Image (cartoon, one colour):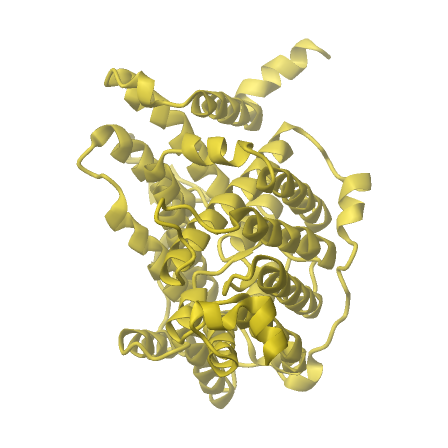
Length: 460
């Protein structure tokens, strides 16, 4: 006990070994849904990734990252592959932009290295201050809508009628278009998702601890009862993705668009981490009277290290989880909470055989609930200030409609300086924002075949 007290300063923080253990278990249960959701998203047919391999990578990234956070930073904060980042990895980087999962992992590896550099330099304050808070909030809320949309679509609750839309101007039919609509709720697979969503929402509004994880388990049971799940015996690791990132370096297509992808990985990880650390740190008494986080460089180092380790293991960016608040509320005050959480992640390896019971319908309620939680940031955006409300709205609406997180970020970063210049508030725009706006504008130009094809033809 004395060893724990001396290393983690338990007595100084007003906690005990028992409290830290309970807090660690509470945190683990609150975020354990990622063990099922991450393999489902990254292992979506067409990505080339094996769900079993992703499960192993998820455990490695979460366990290592959380242990480093506890042992190095002494923070009661747990880490795991981030929601939103895994969606960006799969649906934007792989499906929309066409990069291989190996190259996507290589991009995450680079973003993790850049994060490490930022963690120990004065640049991090400049970067954090350069991005307007309203845009940070808009990005988080937009990702929430995007994640919820993926859950609803993949489960079949939202489907598409392969009909033909009519051009609103000419009245002519638009061949190949589809109309989004509500799925057939009598379909057993869709019914599983609907029942699961109702269960999860009830648990959450009743403030049941670990409601998302419990909802996922109960949904899996409903799925099994209705005969909609796979078999536990059929699930294993067909392919490990440890070290797969290296193939991305040797065989990838390193064009301008991919550097935008790397920036987006870094942006999402960096600001998600900063926001979580401040929120959890304030509740855990880790913020000074001046509003500064204690040992923030060590906490950022832990997060960056987790991202690098996750990339090597074979998963999307790893970040600090806001669910760590549940552990803090349970009495966790030191890194020992994180150590216990990390150990629980290691023990979770025994859950791999049950991954066969996790389908899109089973994970849909968790995705929708996470989306709701992320969308709650909308209330903090200054909607009465039109100059910031417009780019914030474009950021949010573009993500689900364009099916791309990076497109939403790009639109917001481009229109923010435009609206502030138009309202004669250009002095409020940081120089870094002008640079980023120009970079994203180039990104749109490079991505447009209509614009670029004539230019390419000039050099033939």
